[in-house]
Image 1 (spheres, helix red, strand yellow):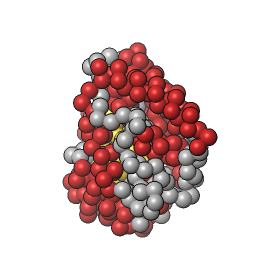
Image 2 (cartoon, rainbow, N blue to C red):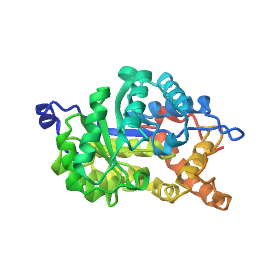
Image 3 (cartoon, helix red, strand yellow):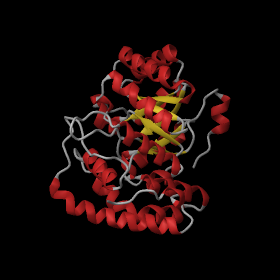
Image 4 (tube, rainbow, N blue to C red):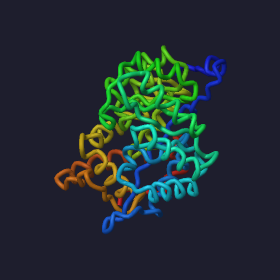
Length: 326
């Protein structure tokens, strides 16, 4: 991984810590689709137990856009009370004033626990994005993770323009690069800017992203232990060890990341692991297709076998084997 500490410090920039920042799903009760605070607390605690660097709450896969303001506040309170990890909070709004309101609400709830707010690129014009970020930072004082995720935002920006935004905004502490091909984007960004650059997309490109210079992963996966083990192995032993740590899980990573139903699959996996009680999703997200049940069970059996082998050895999951397929 490229180390930007010296350059960043010279410009007064604070960097988000390297590693795995888990993207937390928001569990709902199947019958009412109300937020399930007990399952949410269990999920946040599991991330801490397996050694995640921090958590990303109210992201796209946290279904933040489907939550009311009161529900978003409740989610933040539950997560903050359930673990001691630093938190990045996703901001759903693309317009400046609503984004400021969301960021202020997150800071009000979390205080010093708020490591940064995650803001999506809202224009292909770097000057517009820069003005947007500057207004949010000026109003809130919070650091910003800049997310380039065209699938969610509907906005595509060139890597050169994205780098220009980061260079103009010294309060940007990281970039979350989710515009495919992500290894190409990460390689170009790590050469052009002095901030941490993270991959996402469920860990599909994690090995290549690490090779490209990423700081780790900021994403969700139903077996986040695999992501943590992979990044730790990369740091301590290199590419071969990182590949060995992640490889047994890659079929499930690929299965889970199917377009339109990725969220439902992940929640079904988390339910099967006993991490959440119900797997319901809110509209417009489609429910888990029962035709995939048998396939899911096959993939999870292999993932459980890999996790058990890690737990029997010296991997990061040793202290976290409190759940299993049920």
